[in-house]
Length: 391
Ligand SMILES: Cc1cc2nc3c(=O)[nH]c(=O)nc-3n(C[C@H](O)[C@H](O)[C@H](O)COP(=O)(O)OP(=O)(O)OC[C@H]3O[C@@H](n4cnc5c(N)ncnc54)[C@H](O)[C@@H]3O)c2cc1C
Image (cartoon, rainbow, N blue to C red; front, top):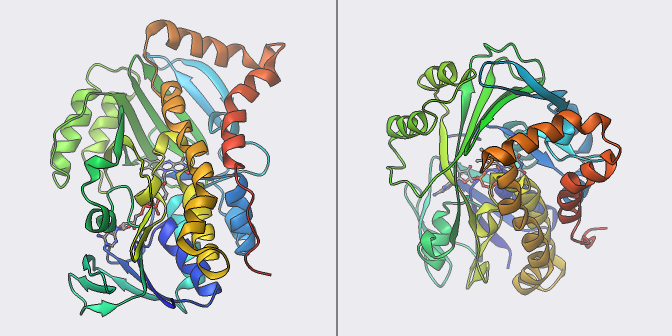
């Protein structure tokens, strides 16, 4: 097996391309977008994934681009600050964990691979035959020994090889929306948020950002909507946030102008196997943990490392399934638990959460309480012993 196709050039795709090349495989990556996607939101790299980044020689470059967020502040409906706390605690980061913009990380990974990996932009696979012949929307059909689906939670590769998404998607009961807005709150490496029962609004501006990102999450029954109808999705968000105070009305006005609007359910992908014949899935395509887990990027990085390593020096696809599954399960378990802390379900719980945040710096059992927030994330992020695969 030497000639491998990867569908998707985001974190999972570019990281898999890097490790496959390093093990001597010939790699082609097909990406639907016309270029590597810039921007996006901030993501965390923790635990085992930091080791993967280090083994790629990227640790210093990643740290140099970290978001350097300082604080997070909760505001009440009238705009009065209720509680302020450390940004790392807010993000569940401990030790050497790094937060970086997804686009910055993707650019670093792309730069590392662009010279010896073939990238086909503005294209998509349309079929994979049993003999490995892959057909494309634009390119001519070509033969590959293996096709890797790294094309995200709504993976086309998964649909072609394994069937409809509904068999594998687990809806956690929430929606998320994020986009760029002007920094009218004059945030400087800080987050500002307002929570009401079932609805949370958050605005942040990182070190690199001249504007800000507005992120909304809310609990909801499944919504019927057209994935291509961005105006319709903005309308659903506006309706979901109707009546929420603080700066939310003004943020929703800004959302109307946003060009990078993202809208999706908070869902996970659960599969009994990630490989079938000549197809294997990596990252969100195979085991999306949802944005609520805060571990999607780390799962993609570790998954890429293990997949390429097992193909080169281990037990191939069986080894990938075996080595990675406990790590995936530990991290997916964070999603349903974390989301309840991000969107609060009752007035009592909301009152209690704000009280705790306010009192935390002065509480006698502070370290124990902080550990209750960061401990499960840190344990899941380290729940794999990485083999070395390369000298
Ligand atoms: C709002 C939000 C907040 C998040 N916050 C965090 C966080 O704090 N921490 C964290 O670790 N993770 C976070 N994540 C998750 C994280 O972004 C992903 O888990 C991570 O980027 C790994 O994704 P991936 O590479 O598997 O897929 P994606 O990033 O979804 O990339 C899929 C790629 O495939 C391409 N593609 C799609 N279809 C096709 C096709 N047919 N043909 C070719 N290419 C195709 C897409 O254009 C894209 O480039 C968040 C996600 C979202 C949406």
